[in-house]
Every structure is written in C-alpha cells, then in structure tokens.
Length: 157
Image: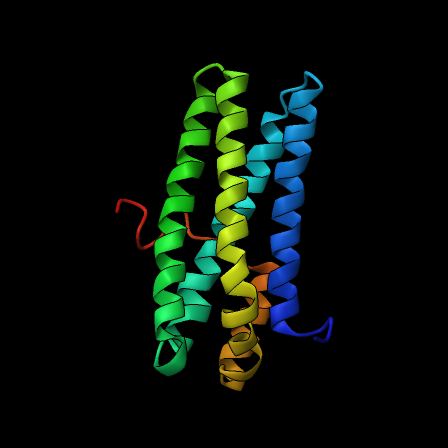
C-alpha cells in the first residue's frame, strides 16, 4: 500500500490514536496524570469516527461492504461510550485504577475494530470513492474539524 493512499492516511490516524493512549498509560503508570494528552487523543478519535461515518461509509456502504460498515458503526458506538466514561472519570477527580481500566478497555475495542476496518473497509477508500469523494475525504483528513456536539450514530445504543 502506498504511503499516499487514503487507506494509509486513515491507518496513520489509528497509529496516532493508539500511541496517544499508550503514552497516557505509560505516564499514568509512572505517576503522572496527563489529562490534556488523553483529552487530545479522544478528540482525535472522535474526529476520526466522524470522518468515517460522514464521509467514508456512506458511499461504500452498499454491496460488498454493507455488513462490514454496519459492524463498524456498531463498534463506534461502544468506542464512543467508552470515551464518554473516560471523560467522566477525568472530570470526577481521576481515580487512576478506573482510568487505567477504561483506557485498556478502549485499547481492546480499537484493536478488535481495526482488525476488520483496516483490511476490509479502508481499501474501499482507495478504490470505491469518486474523485470528488476522495478529494473531500483527503481535505478533511488534512484540515477538517468535527462539528461541535456531533455524536456517532450508535452513541446511545
């Protein structure tokens, strides 16, 4: 896969998010609570989910990718709710054991999610989008912002 493909860019965001969670856990284990660091990572993850649900999934959700996209959207809901739990813990005085537990839970969810998303869904970003859709996704990856208050489709489910 080329470094310049949309799928590669999406995977790089996965790696950035994974690294942010890992960095938070390392600091937590050494006695430092990096609330700003994990908040930035969670913001990045929410934006990533937004771009998938609003820009990538709609054009590829027909045909062969329909069930995979459905599964990804369900997974986003569980990931979203786990991020909400982390936000609440950070606001409640940050019990380190609970923060650690929820971060490990988020890591597990992301590993399982990405095992399907990267090899099954992301190649469609390179082959299943129109030129205009690919340009829109690329532009959002570079400069896009998630609208204030947006939540994923299955956030409450």
